[in-house]
Amino acid sequence: MYMNYMDYVNDNCMNMFTVGQVTKMQSILNTSRSAILTSDGCSGSNVVIIDAQPLQILAPTGASCLTTFTPSVKFRNNGNGNITALQFTFGTVGSSDSLTFIYNGTLAPGATINLTSSNVFTRPAGSYTFFARVRNVNGANDNNLANNYLTGPFTVGNASTAAIPFFDGFESNNFPTNYTIIPSNADSTWKVTNTAKKTGIYSLFINYYDYTVRGAKDEFILPSFNLSSINNPILVFDRAYAQYTFPGSGTISDTLEVWVENGCGTGFQRVYRKFGNTLDTDTATQSFFKPTSASQWESDTINLSAYAGNLVNIKFRGINRFANNLYLENINVKGIQQLVSNKIL
Image (tube, rainbow, N blue to C red; front, side, top):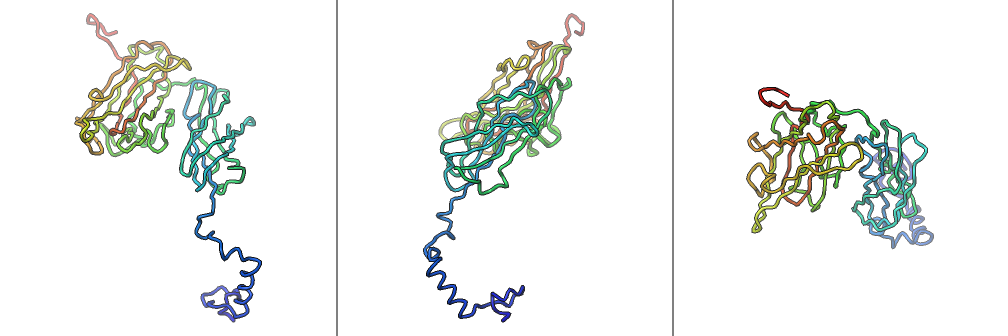
């Protein structure tokens, strides 16, 4: 009976069960497996999927002149039920001092949460790989083991500094690996784009037109600079921005700030802040702002003479207010010559 489904022949001719087979299956469904007749499992309405994913390593990332760091990881609930208990481990690959972290709270389906350790890790100067691994969710195994493990490179105690003059036009088409990015939102933070530029092909861009988190701060830190042998150090960069015209309420603007740290671990101080008319380089618009010519860009220069002779770290911070897109280009750290009494110093 090659047409019988239970003949196990690997062909396309099977199309029937025998009367006896049907009777046997109906008997099983009416007795030992009767629960199947009232189950709505196939609809998925009562099937709880447990799936927690480490989405992004917030710290440590990039390069830090410090040898200590406090781990922070963003997780997302990819399942269809609340997560009320999440256990995961984190540490550096190859090290024996990984720690277990337990979160007890309520994380709704689709929601994300940033979990920061209360422990400070110390590592000798060098390059490492950080990891975060989900162990169990709600006291049970995660249903999707494929996305339970996340790694990322980082460097601590990095005594090396970027050469001066330093210039970055982002023409590598990748966010620089020697920058440290501190995002508020992994999906909407600073990114390299080829949709706008002042020179070359690429620029750095943050999409504030579609960014929905008011007050979100997205930062990136340049590699460290040693200004000990630099005369009259300055930071120069190009920016492009247009405010958003809010119907009936005038214009709204996002904010760009620059912060400088004098030495390592001393804390950043703000040296630059622009928003509104001081930030924009083009006419306010209700449309998705994208500069199409060099005339829509402006250049800023920040005097770093107060930090001459020292190691410095420079941080750019964007602050969202639901306005419009911000672009950066041609970041340059250099020394300048001054002409005094007809002499070049």
